[in-house]
Amino acid sequence: MNKGAVGKAIAELGVIVVGVLIALFAESAWNDRQDRLKGRQYAARMSLELNKNLDHLQNDLRWTFQACNSAEAALAEMRDTDGTPDPAMMLRLFVSVATFPAPEYHRATYDDLIATGRLSLIDDAVLREQIVYVYTEFFESLSAWRPPKETELRLAVVRTLPPEYIVRVIADCLVDPETGFLAAKLRSCGTIPSSNTPAFWYEKLMARPDIEGLTSERAWQVCDFERSMAPVQDRLKSLVMELENTAG
Image (cartoon, rainbow, N blue to C red; front, top):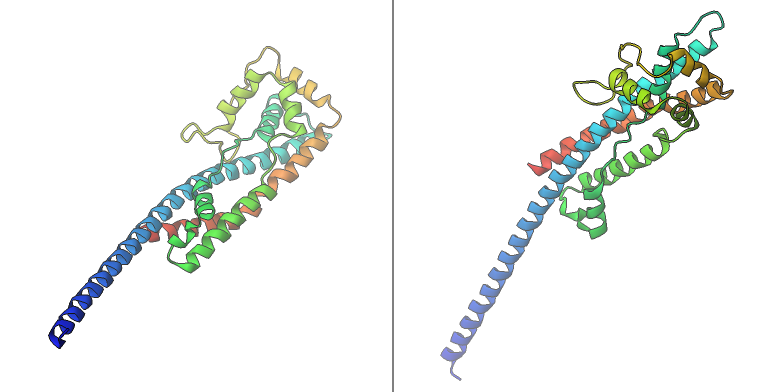
C-alpha cells in the first residue's frame, strides 16, 4: 500500500472518529439538556406539592390556635367557682377543642425522587441538601408535634352530644364561610337548636369526672403546635421560592 492510500485511509478513519465524537458529544449534550428539563419539571412539581402542604399547615395552625384559645377559655370557666358558665358557649368551646381538620400532607414527588435516585437531576447541590433537610424535618416535626386526632376528650364530646349538633356548631361557629377552613377564632353565633336545651347537654358532659383533666391535656397538646411548627413553616416557604426559581 503506497503512502497516498495510507494517508487517505487515515483521513477517512479520522473523519469517522470525528463523526463518532461529534455524535457522542451531541448525544451527551441532548441528555444533559433532557436531564436539566426533567430537573426543572421535578422542581415545579415539588413547589406545587409544598404549596399544598403550606395551605394544609396554615389550616392546621389556624385550628390549633382556635383550639388552644377554646381550651383555655373552657378551663377558666370550669375553674371559676364564683361564676355561672353559659352552657351554649361552653358546648361550642368543647366542640372547638375536639374538632380536627385532618388534612392530608403530600410527599409523593419527593419520595419518587429518593426512590428512583433522580434527586441528582436537581443541579444545585445546596438545593438538593435543602430539599432533603426540609422534607425530613417537616414530616418528623408533624409526627412529633401534630396533636392526635382521636383523644378521650373527642370521644367524650362525640359520644355525649348529638351528631347534628356538632355538625351545626362546626359549620356555624368554627368554619370561615369565605375560605371553608376553620377560622382563627371561634365565630359569634347563636344557640344551636337541638332536641334538648344546651343546659341539658352541658350537664351531661360535665357529669364526666375526667372532663377537666381531658380538656387540660388537650390544651397542652394544641397550644404547643403553632410554636413548634412556625420555624418549619418558614423553611418550607423558603424552599418553595428556591424551587420556583429553579423551575423557571
